[in-house]
Length: 571
Image (cartoon, rainbow, N blue to C red; front, side):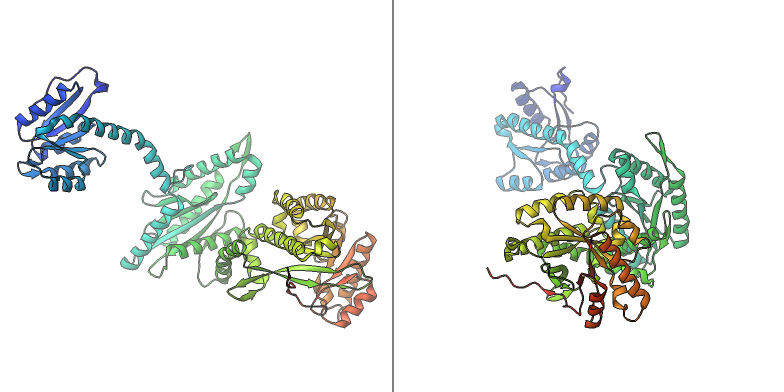
């Protein structure tokens, strides 16, 4: 080996690893670098074995190799270098390489080639490659961080959902081909949103990090733990049967519950719901398995905080929830592509003419088939999609009233249903005001309605929202009135303009004196508080006449007119 004296300024040195079986050629190469005033240190090796040994000893800047070597070629050198460090540049310096061979070498991974009879190119080539190599090294931490975040969660550093799904699919293939059994867990922190809203997002993040540590402590080294979304975790248990999984689930549940979380001097008990599904030879794919585990987790939540449910495909709950999960993406698509359809159902004025009263209703057009709300609304409620639907309805009702010119007449009252979850959406009220201004809708024409049970469940929010909306000139109706245990008492609290008497009482009021008495009581109390009444489920003329006699203001139902598409607007 030949090694020249090393300059003293170590940080400015160019670190070269040279492989060449001719010491004379190496001397001329080093002489060219020295004559150019280039500070460098080098090591000269002659064989692939020596090269392999030296590649691991120093953080080299550039590898210089001859093309033809004893027992190997530059192709072998490039392969060895790139296997060891793919970023390390290789420059060929040769006197016996033609253009075709040089191009082939660069295709194999060489950065450049220099002819030994023209070493004046060597310095600029080497410095260029050093600069590129330094740039790659400086960017490497960012690239590694980016690569890490592609497969991991930034907060907990756990595997993310995308990578977790790959692992599940691998276990599916293993179960099919080798008959092994694995198990998938879906974990959801109970009431995490309430904790997050109450204590703040910083506390929520701290809690998630602590839960991650607890879960890791309960698992075997070969098990995979992932963060699937905000407060949802997944666990993949390698070669595991149900008995062990159930025991582990109870261990995890107890460990989380017993580890009190202290924040701002207050102690919080944390629980999680766990759903599980077995991965066996009959497993379909990772998406189906995650859906099944998710369904089992929802079933666990319904049983109460800290519950554990093992999925069973024979369970009727699975069929229902599976249907809801299939509806969720269709609902989102319908809102985005306007596959929802507005229907309307006029009401009959039973006592006096006070302008037309009509309720807007929602349907979905699924490839030409009109689907009623009973099929997709439960899924929308389960997956918190009702605010999305309510926004779509509000916008398209206002747009229809504007395009039809009904807003210019300023006559009539048009009813629009809202969900209880929408009342908790703080931006929804602002959206209504913006759309009302955009489409020039007189507020008194719009009557928003919510069911009595939803209003009671969100009483504080409901009263706040209704009060604000009525101050803007909108009207409000309480739907399905009478089904609550304390219906009349809530009229003192909830400020509304209309009372819609629940149709279950109206439907049987001619056969059942108690139902008729409830209808009469609802009507009398409503009038006593200055409200107008609407009877639902009016199926025939006999019921309509009885309602006239009782003094109900409006009637709605198939006996009045069935819901139908909106009249066509002729522009």
